[in-house]
Length: 138
Image (tube, rainbow, N blue to C red; front, side, top):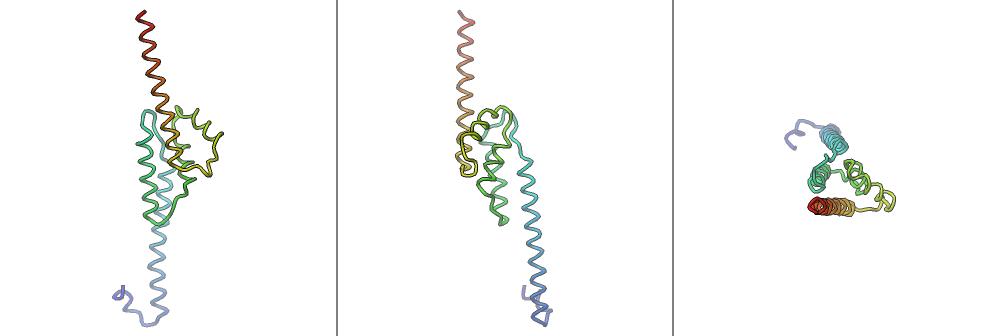
C-alpha cells in the first residue's frame, strides 16, 4: 500500500486515494451481499428433499453473507426458512405462525419443529401402510 500511495505528495491526495480504494471494496462487498440475499430469496425446498439438506444450503448462504461482513438477523432466517417450505408443510407452517412469535423464534427451534413434523408424517405413513396390508390379508 505504501508503494501505491508513494506517488502522492500531498496528504490530501493520499487520503483521497485511500478513500477511493476502500470505497471500491465497500461497493464490492455490498454488491456481494445483495447477490447473496437474492440467492437466499430464490432458494426453495423441493418436495421430497429433507429439511436437513435445505437447512444446510440456507446456513451456507448465511455463512457467506457473514464472511462478507453483513450479519443476517435470526428473524430473517426463520422467515426465509418458513417461506421456502413446500406445500406438504403448510399445516405445520400455519400452526407455527399462529402459535408462536416469529420475531423471537430461534432458527434452530423452527428447524426442530419442521423436522418433528416430518418425522410424525413418516410414522403415520408407516402405520397406514402396515394397517392397509393387514386389512387386505384378512
